[in-house]
Amino acid sequence: MREFIIGTDWLGDCDDVVALRLMLRAATKGEISIKAIGINAADEKSVTSLDGFMNLENVSGIPIGIDHSATYVNEKATYHGKLAKFASNYTCNEDAQDAVKLYRKALAEAGDKVEIAEIGFLQVLAGLLLSEPDEYSSLNGIDLVKTKVKKVWSMAGKWDEQGGKEYNICCSEASRNAAKTVCEKCPVPVTFLGFEVGYDVITGSALEKYDYLYTAMCDWGTDSGRSSWDPMLCLLALIGDEQEAGYKTVVGTASIDENTGANFFKEHKNGLHKYVIKVKENSYYQNQIDRLIK
Ligand SMILES: [Ca+2]
Image 1 (tube, rainbow, N blue to C red):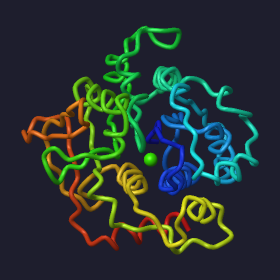
Image 2: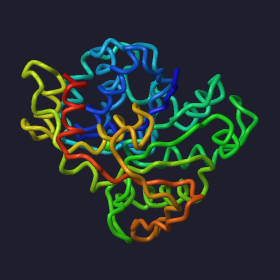
Image 3: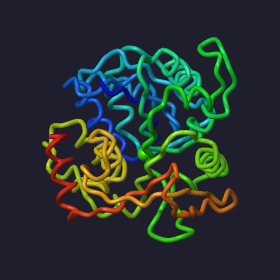
């Protein structure tokens, strides 16, 4: 069975919640196994909110890690308080392990190679790459990833222009440096799904009104669906093949200007990086996601 680690900025936007439902439902159906979830941007209720969400989705036993330095105030994510009421494994963010440590532990314990799906900022993945040997593995981060990671799927970047800018990369000095580190040091293939792919695919409008996912979307600020950056990345990762998922790819090497966060792409056939371009109508992706989250 394919094994995943998921990284999310479980801070505010509701497209992470839609995306996690896709992944958790696939796990419930036995299609994938999720070894860990790392939170790379948080408010004070992010860990208990995610714990509560997993309980509501009838998923248990997936450890949560967090970047403890990435906790912010976020008044828009009122759904975190509602989901946190269903938490049972964690009482606060401090109960969760450092996400880099958790990634290292999960990779060290993995039998087969793991895939990493990142739908937030890249500093946990960068921290993993820069990590030193520890109690979990005698390998440094790059060698651990080389040995235990099959592929990284990342919702980040804007690839329909050279110098494109996208939030997950540009947001802060930490996110810009992290994206640069991942582009320069990750020793396994990375497929990017950029801003331009997900913004005009709107999902979640068909949810039932009693569904707590619908509540999360309303609390974030929409009752008529949301752009599908994270759900599309997760759907792509679940299908596991870019062409089969309805995309063509551009292959080469991605790079980041750490001062501005602008992303660039140099095409060449032996590159470790790809970005995806839609080849189907938006409704093709929208219908699949809406069907899977219902
Ligand atoms: Ca996200």
